Image 1 (cartoon, helix red, strand yellow):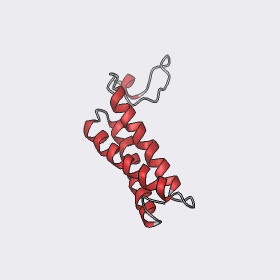
Image 2: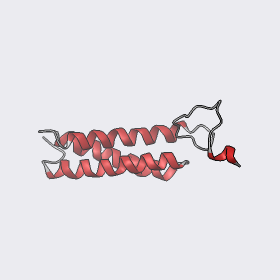
Image 3: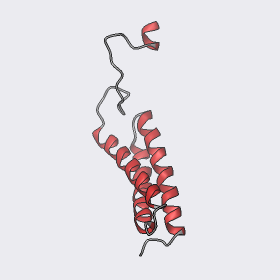
Length: 103
């Protein structure tokens, strides 16, 4: 069983959301969109006048993340979803606290 613990010499390390060996393009795209929206909301919340972008991107990322978590198949997708959901929540909360959805 040592081959389970360490990759063989001819295999390179690959970062993949498909840990089960099957392709999940829709679920992967949803997870990536969640993280991008979450990071956008989080960064925009700290910019002067970025409360509008933070509020909308955070709301979109939070909703997308919840749905993505519901349909996710693999553990890496779920981990990415949680990072995106938390960043979206923090971004939308700070965006609302600094001015909300409208300029």
